[in-house]
Image 1 (cartoon, rainbow, N blue to C red):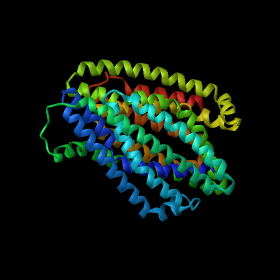
Image 2 (image 1 turned 90 degrees about the vertical axis):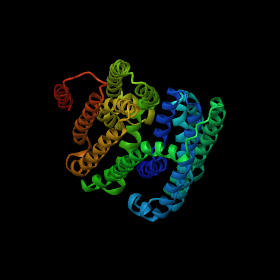
Image 3 (image 1 turned 135 degrees about the vertical axis):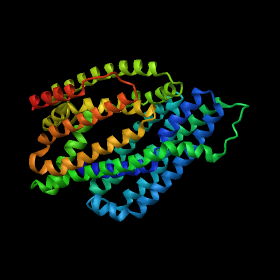
Image 4 (image 1 turned 180 degrees about the vertical axis):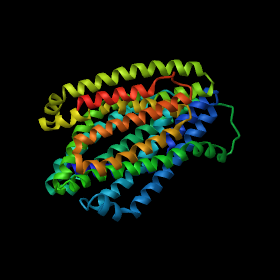
Length: 420
């Protein structure tokens, strides 16, 4: 069941990406810039426009999912679930899009705790409702179990959206001003889509490739002479049990690093290049130290974590294999947000697309031949190379000081081959 649900979630996340259309980054960037120059009226107009556009994009994504529901069910989900699951996704996507835009606004005004409160209660409601629905519908089979999980997500998203909307309406009153800008709606739309469109296009490509990657994993196991049911079960163990533990620290990291976007956008708007270099060097040194410690902790205590959380020692082998990846996963988010704040989001997305495409190729070619353990070595080196590309881009933006990238790459290669 876990493997099937992970396939459902990969398709669901692709729909969410379509609905977001990069609006959340646009609202964060533009509101931060308006605040930096003291334009309160511009803050209100941009935030309001972004929320409306996110709703329209969410509706369009839902309609696209409805039109392609047969293809999604038969090809992507192997006919394991019914159309009701797709229908529930379509109801949730516009709500998630608007909540994402409002969260981007809160990040821009440095009041991220407000969206965090909504997310906290959303998760509690999701757990309680999902547990209730699973107890009610799980005896009826896999299809009803997946429907229960997605329905629980929909109800929690409704609650989250209402909370975010109320908090937004209360907060935006602070920007009441007698001064009104006379820019037409077209002016704000152009500014929003100038940021959102390239981010959206590259996000669609990357998210589509990421969904293809998730679908490719069980197919690649089957190519390695593994039965479909066992392939889905193994996929569920890796992606649904081991990976959540490995990426769990990223929950905290991503929340903190998202605050870097408005900070660096403000620095960039004010041309404070020395401050950018100084702050980035400090952040990167601290983040690297923490990431290495987290990776070591996951590798050493993999058996204890697997037994404590799942009561299954077999999951520990996957946690141990994936532990070094946590370093690049965590640092990747930090560098991404710094570059987005410096108006280099297009380069970030291109590199991310390259990363995901190489993932798909590695999975299709290496998993049937070498298995997941050997694939990890190639994957680690590939993530290393992706990180170096972004590091080079930050150097072009005059953020980091010069470093010997070639030396670092071969040092990492030596460490990986030694550990395996």
